[in-house]
Length: 410
Image (cartoon, rainbow, N blue to C red; front, side):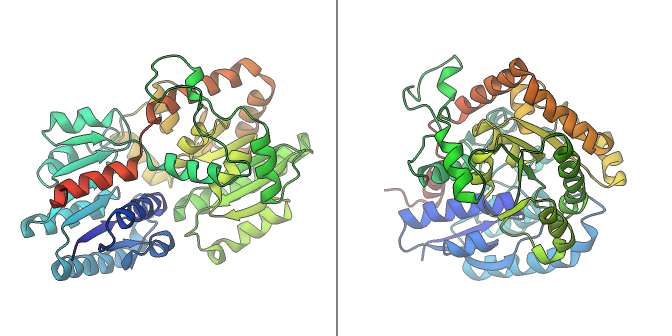
């Protein structure tokens, strides 16, 4: 029986795994897909070996070590039992590199989909991965050169969040294009071709469908999906809303949370947010962002989603003091936000650690609200970023690669 195993470790990777599994099952009716994931992968028919972990950082990882060890043992047992034709590893490098080290001697073909951030830190992983994987499928255009220099067959396949966004926009009434349909996907240069969200009807309709007043502006605050992010940033977002309401009484507030979030664990914070008038939306971050006039976003994939949806944003992040201090010593990048990394400049403000405070965040939001040229410049760079992903279907292309690796292509 044709068998593929997909191993993910956190919410964003699990989304990519679910989109890939859906594409695989659509093409191969007799395919068994095994994996580590969550509800989204389960819903598309993946046979789950173990659930995902949201651990991140050093201090934060300790509490999840036991669960990670159990998941690793289950993964090894499943690899031995089913001997998948292709093993797909999605990000989560500390875990997935160990999985690759186990699978490689068994002769299993290994595809690494969504590269670890080797361009930011632990660059020695490139050499290690070169000795373990058969192919790399990367989701950021500049990553291809890194792996090709190391002799790893590598391809930029686009980003799966494009598929997620397009699915949401196509489900609206009327359906709405992410990219400007009047511009050829092959067109080069210029800014115009990046746009496709010019119709105010989209935000109006989505606000109504989410339960908001279509006539009032909406600020969405995205706290991330990892445990340490939620613990540090949900309290901050409560304070931001309280301060913001004092100056701008006409705004509405939305808190989109990841589908795998344990709401009971954060009920105290979520309850306080509800008391401030914020609506909590589980698993509807794309729809909430598309409806938003402004956003405050925890650095991560959601910043790219917001850029593709052309939502002006302020980016925030907080780590434990120990993890942050260590990170400054070993991380070698000018920016943490994908929008700024892809633009090679500060397009959106990044407020990190102590700078991520209510006063600083509201100051940056006000700048977006009152400084029209500043806001327009932000949108201009968003549209340049959109052009990088236009016409690329990551899940379909990765399915092609798996088909080639497994020798199923006729």
